[in-house]
Amino acid sequence: MPTLYTTIRRPLITEKGLNVKETEGTLVFDVAPEATKTEVKQAVEALFKVKVAAVRTSNVLGKERRRGKFAGFRPDWKKAYVRLKAGEKMPEYVSNL
Image (cartoon, rainbow, N blue to C red; front, side):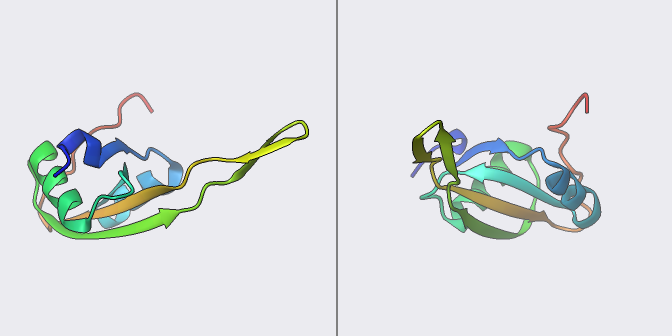
């Protein structure tokens, strides 16, 4: 079983991610590609001391990137939308925005 910090790599701090956090009570994370929904749920509950209602995951394909005549692809990655139970306090991992 992977550790908490290998399961959850980092929070996604984007305009869409912050909007979902404010309106739907959902956190967005970049997670390990082999992480399951159950592992993501357990990791979020242990790290932030909150109760999780649901987890949705999405596999994101890497984009093509070019450097002059050379082309390559960014690596594929996995995104997790973690919805907290009603009444849970939203963790503040974003500051100075």
